[in-house]
Amino acid sequence: MQVVAPLRKADGGTVWVEGMFVRIARGPDTGRLQAILRDTTERRLLDARMQEAQKRESLGQMAAGIAHDLNNILTAIMGWASLAESARDPSRVTEALSSIRVAAERAGELSSSMLAFAGEGNAQRISTDLADLVSEMKPLLTSAFPKNVGLVVGAPAGPVMVVGDEVQLRQVVMNVITNAADATGAQGGDVLVETGIEEIGAAFGEGEHLFGTPPSIGPAAVVRVRDHGCGIAPERIQHIFDPFHTSKAKGRGLGLAAVLGILARHEGCVRVRSEVGVGTQMEVVLPLTGTVVTTTGPQARPETPADREGTILIVDDEPMLREVMRRAFSGVGFEVLQAASGEEALEVLDQHSDRVTAVVLDRSMPGMGGERALVEIRARLPELPVLRISGDAAGDLAAEHAHNTTFLGKPYGVRQLVDALLGLLDRC
Image (cartoon, rainbow, N blue to C red):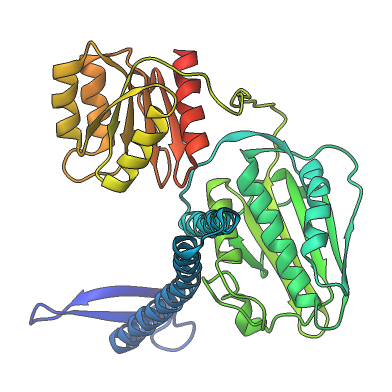
């Protein structure tokens, strides 16, 4: 029998001891226990220091990668903004503004990847057929592949239903398949993708590289991606989901790290099998569902919304965002009141409660944040429509606070903002 336990020293310190206890089988001490004790305190301290050093190295690598990508985006935005300011031809200004929008969307994708890596982000859980999802993505994926890499998608035996956020599940599939294509690119070949249902036994993943939440025993949804690329050395497999870790010349980013973050929210996992010089197989495993979960999407709206009447209270601590929202809502006929904090919002409501048609409420603010402000707003005006805005997860609300509310995640465009508010008002 082996035991590891902390012991307190006479001076009050702690020493860790590893003990092996063996029963003596022969001789005059037959039946007694022999103990072999070893002080492992120094080894534990060295292990802890090593883990801390590896953590700092990983965080440093992630920070450097994010800074690199973000600086590229900011450089593009600043460059196009300067070109727009100096342009005399209106078409050049339009081109610059369009490029700034594209750069901003890239920044939003980077932000979403970081939130996915952290297991956060805005998720809408509905029933999704993984088989259909993979088939629909084939044209998009092949267009982004190197010319010498093909994509072969096997025909599933039937629907493979899971419950999850379709956008995030697409990101998982895209990242895993794109990673396989990058690994294959040097020598060329096909990436093979199969979607199906697999019976999970008690020994699933034993002695293998399994990342994420192990699946329950029984049927599970599986997306299997195989490549015949360079393969991954055994000592590197444990690091392939680290942020900005790559063994490929082309690879750089949060792709596979984001996969684990998303799967954590979907109670899924990835099983990895790889051999250097032969290739790699990744299996994305998710809980199977037989229940159909649907959601009501936003209603299609005309390109130019009709003018509305009413007063919107904007609550956000960022002046630039308040000004964008003011112009957006004024542009469709609303009057606008503004507040820079939850406390100020309640003061404005107390003075103008008879005028305010709806509140647009940021979640994260100094002082009274959006969640607490919503509770106070509901205490005063239980039926008032509230559009909640945040750059991270929507969060869970009690039923009495969620009434007449909707959520919009950052970053958003002006059209998305206006549509979200009008949709909320139409429902209320």
